[in-house]
Length: 197
Image 1 (cartoon, rainbow, N blue to C red):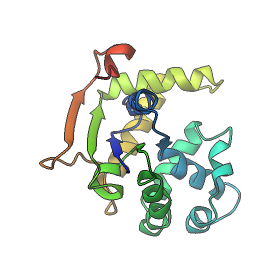
Image 2 (cartoon, helix red, strand yellow):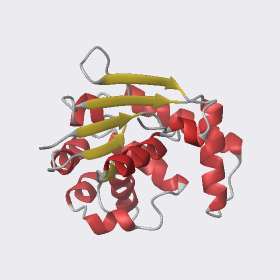
Image 3 (cartoon, rainbow, N blue to C red):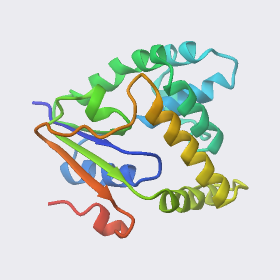
Image 4 (cartoon, rainbow, N blue to C red):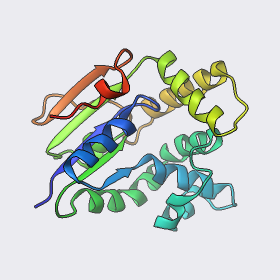
């Protein structure tokens, strides 16, 4: 039997932390679907077109060291706005979601496009400033020379592009069985943000 948990939200909202905690608690495999787009975007740096990059994606590409960089994040948002790229990556995500035993996926359009019939759907967000602070800390820890103001501007640009695209825009899906809107998680500690059960 398959059981899908779909977790959506903007960048640095905490959905990855929540997703990993849910997956660990229930013993489900976890897929950060943003890595698919980051890996596709990173492959365009090597001269491939976005569609060629998506069509040639392998699981080994998801292990690249540069996928959490700011450049990869911007590239991911750009390629994710291309309908043919999104279509090329749908099968991979849907197959993962329907594996026997259950799965947790996090991204921008899991509950609305990839798995609209997921047994559980969550949407997580936080203020722009809190998300920028979190992402800035991650990037600085990896040795990137970037200011918090630059990260904030980058997040807002990505949010605008992700929300305005015609193909699978970032938005919560409401009104369906299994949907939950967690709202703003600014004041939650790491433990509070992913308490299970």
